[in-house]
Length: 399
Image (tube, rainbow, N blue to C red; front, side, top):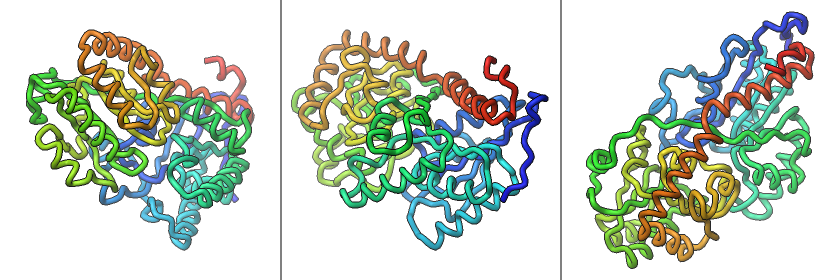
């Protein structure tokens, strides 16, 4: 068991030690959130450690591309694949790291790190365990049999957790309905992010090799099955029949590359960019963003699109509707290529509507999804734990 010492409740000045564990820091929403918290939480009150596995060969490393200054301790066995022997060793390695650092809080992100990290925290005697659901695996990932096994596992892990965090209300409600945790365990903490300064649209298109006078539809994210890249290409083909000058951008890579025949069919109207560290350039070049997923948590790419002043066309899944206000900042649809295509054509043909929605999207996302709000919400969560545990005086919860 851990021999950690904890803050003196009377002092109110000691720093909480927080160990953050994530399966891998590949480019995507969880890595964006973790990086924002490492940069933003008050260093006088919180001492951090980040533990992560390595990204896969078909992924890009967020830390390498966008946050090389952030310190991280890598564990080779904390990878995406499930290997029982390696996973058991990883639990022991994590428990050892926890005993050395003596965290007051272990905060896990993503499914595998959530399982191994919370098991290790129990083994090491860490007082408080927190897990963030950046989405869930209840729909669209596995067979019914495997989904039931995932649900049983998550129910057991929830019982080992002091607090559970969901990125959106819909994500929380789905989890509670599945019997994963109790409602009073949950806090809803939406993502928060920022965009670097973008080039002017004409310069952005020049940098990406896109003609300056064409309407542009962009996709930003992992190219993986649940994101339905083939649906994106199907939408592109339908849109091209109505708007022949339209161009389409796919920014990302993954384990489900686009079908070569579908790519060839779109010809030079399709731009496959791979991973880019200057994602703000992609948004600057676009007229709208399209998301075609079967399941989502709360997509950071749609938050980024809003911050860039772009409207969105997206499937109404997960907590997407908490980012995109249907009819106000974008248009939502069922997971149907024809419905998504109709919405896309509507926005491409109506420049005034597109600009109005984009302006409203910028105002809405800047208010609700900034980094400062994410940091403040998380700091309040940790403070409430410290006050409940008697580590900090109750007066700190009022700051």
